[in-house]
Amino acid sequence: MRSPRLSQKQTSYSARNGIIPMVAMPNVSANSALHPTDAQREAIAETARDLNRLRNGWLNPPGVSEADLAKRTLTNLYNARPTWLAQAHERLDAAVLTAYGWPAEIDPEELLARLLALNLARAEES
Image (cartoon, rainbow, N blue to C red; front, side):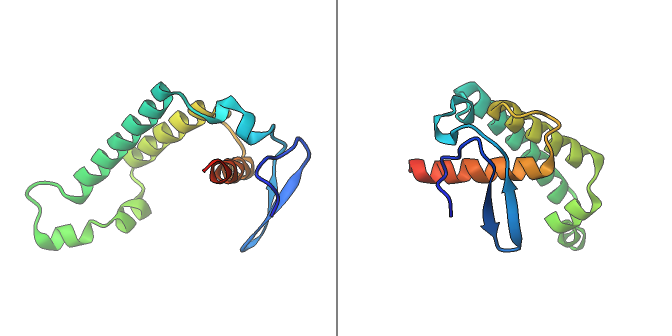
């Protein structure tokens, strides 16, 4: 496995199901944009709390029978993917992307590569 300090050149990381291409990124651990501010962390936390509140409201509504509660699982919720849930996740994604200075319309493969690089850099920091 390569060092988490990635150079501008393309690298790759071997994953269980194949190779995940790494995007060209500056030295991750030196990039201050990869350390969100307190305000950005709080924005992420608040958005995550709102998502949790919405999910809990769906999972445990007042006045619902035990039989109906048993059908209200996270799996069933995410399989149904109601609009309010998708929008809550979009708000959380936007808060995270903003905090890291990443574009809102980032390519999914690039996003995964950046998250992996960030994870490796954070592991090295600790």
